[in-house]
Figure 1 (cartoon, rainbow, N blue to C red):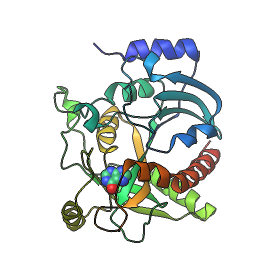
Figure 2 (figure 1 turned 90 degrees about the vertical axis):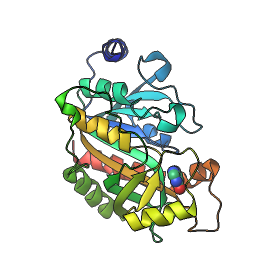
Figure 3 (figure 1 turned 60 degrees about the vertical axis):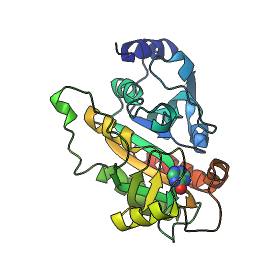
Length: 268
Ligand code: HPA
């Protein structure tokens, strides 16, 4: 049975009448975005049926409702990853809940490794396309005709150009590229990264793609930004680790907060 109705009842009790315009999912080290939310009401995922209980350090486990600039937002601080439970559909009910709360736009953020030598740690990359080659599609098992989601334009060009223009005004370089979802939790090998480079990947990470697919089925307009925490395996002498990912996310995170604040102020 769906938990969406139960979660909506709890949200209505905590934040009566609240309607979201934009939903967001924050990745590793990006929890600082919630500090930009005004009139914030925070609800632990523990209290929200269907919301994932994060098992990863750096992934908060809180839903924050409020405003950024002139826009009402529902921010998920923390997500479920395929590698935690072997299921790629664990974000289905949270996304359905946020959609039912009124959100039509979804902004996904993640930490990612870069396959572009210029996009060094601390850079941001707007995801313009993705590759979902290694994990199961989250819609496997859905029975409606709406499971056949068109993926020719997976990321919304209007939100993308809005974020791009905003970054340019702020003097922040926003790279663009294709994100490849690898299941994790181990990082990729240098040989895998060489292969992904040949296939056309610009960044690699362990999330976001299942959420994009689930969200597109619901009718969300989706944008996504990668916070580049490292050059991908084999591209630098620094060994990859989750600690490094968290540490290196700080510069990108600070810039992403600036972009989102400015973007929402302009798009109210
Ligand atoms: N690979 C996969 N996921 C990641 C990486 C990476 O290099 N960096 C941050 N998340």
